[in-house]
Length: 417
Ligand code: EPU
View 1: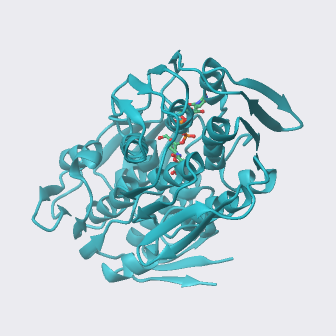
View 2: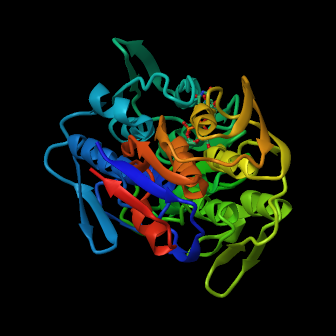
């Protein structure tokens, strides 16, 4: 099992290129099930979750091959199975994204129920309610969810809460339904908008993606498309937070500043210098870090996927700050590891109180999920001495070549197998 060895403290300086967004690429790959013509996706990040989904798609009769920067997906062999087995779903919850497309295109899908994970219970009741509203019959049996329908029928459905993959799943089913579907209280994340752009290029008729209400006019078939995945705002945001944390000076190339606005506004309040240059988004800091209170919420609020990284930043701010996590009920598992490194944090269910600045010292720490791993790597950058972050496979699920990007910014970090 790989681990990172980091020797700190480091000051990050230089330019880093944003990778394609994992959470936009995953539904884009799943959309390949909606057509029998090829899809050409540019800027799909080379991360473990994408490899897992490619394996699942192959199992479902869609082959994929990488041609330079473009991933080509097309039907391959017999589409014998409509089933996402437990072994694949348990390693990646996003496997559930095949449910909507399989149902819409083949009239049937059987997907292992993902169950809870390190950050919360994460039910999929809203995915299922949305598919039921389109006419699907839903059955739960032997740990699997089975959905079935002849042709889906357009309908009006309101999500009980904005859910990112839930919105994506129901959207992918509705594009092939008969008639008009109106989805309310949809997730407004840039990744949902990117999926709608891809589906539209394939021939779908969608209006309102990025707003609370999305209207879809069902079509009979979808065809081939070429699409470039948006930049990963969470990956990019991680490096910009690291720049502010280490008193560094970093330019992020290829990202969309609007997608990063909730983080950038916060970093300005924290005393960092933030600017848009011809090259990209620059974050630099020379003065003291100011503490600020943070509340995570669905887009356009502050993303839960940057909460752990922001917590490290607040351990170095001069004074008291608080973080309230409202999206997931169990997303502070990085905090005890940060405390082992010297951070002063008190946790009360979904509420964290942080007192800074607390000098961090290198330690052996264990990652529990993807963003918690990123948080511990950032902590290692400012800690005195050597930090060893174990279980880097979590990080490899969503960060493309993180050690290489950090090394290019001057960090002393090494992957050890
Ligand atoms: N929820 C329900 N019922 C549902 C669906 C969601 O109760 O049917 C609840 C969840 O338990 C959670 C909240 O609604 O409390 C929001 O969850 P959401 O469904 O939006 O999360 P997701 O779609 O499972 C995606 C990202 C996550 C990211 C969240 C929130 C992908 C593949 N995953 O998950 O990314 O944290 O949205 O923005 O898009 C990550 O990349 O590290 C990651 C966890």
